[in-house]
Length: 129
Image (cartoon, rainbow, N blue to C red; front, side, top):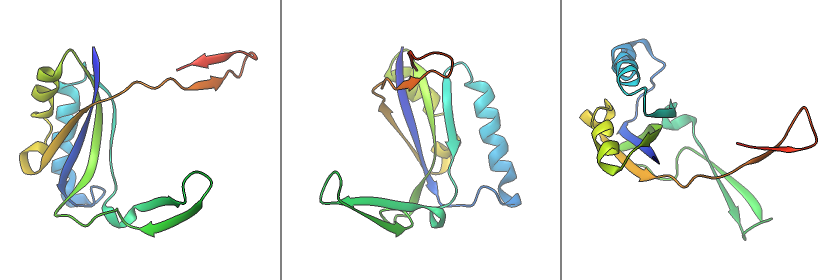
């Protein structure tokens, strides 16, 4: 199995507003239909809530913040799913079911698994997650 990230780009809306309840219901249905391959995901608040972080001068440099996303575009990154699929063809099939693909775009990227070592709360050993 391969991990893929499905990045959802749609017109920027505030999904927390009541008028978008129908759209959220479509995502709920998708989530139920694709539950066997979904490993995580989230809807993102609309772009005015974003903060962009840059470090000038490389590691240890000055942290520079700006309000909003990096670029102004017609479509914004509005959500994502982490999928575990047998191959790219399955990931494409699943991505075509995501409601954002119907009025925007879904970009699929293979995800490189990363091991994070977390100190265990019960022992002095570490746990790999």
